[in-house]
Image (cartoon, rainbow, N blue to C red):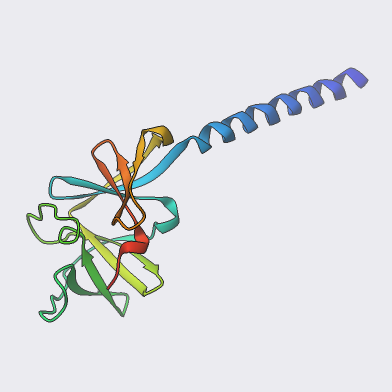
Length: 153
């Protein structure tokens, strides 16, 4: 009977080693949520992920800076909507169709896109970093990783 207990312990120990190795492997990867705006792919790290909603429309406000597309109604709350095509100087072919609703030190806001492409995992070593004052945190191939702190209303 003792051998059965030690067999269970051995399996548990092996499982713990395997999980620890997988955890270490995961830390070598970046998880990104990717959106499309025109021909560009924009990504966000998990600490800035928010609710993704389909836009049924938004109201432009002429006196706002060009990177603020307008406002939209989210369950009775009026939410500012950013269009990153202006500050990032990327092609913007048409109206925004989806938004990721998130917040930073300025409060809650939405970031508009053409579509949600999904999530992706890239090796950390494949992410090129940018200077701290740049609006992008880095690049993963042709995917631009947006620096959330750089977004202002």
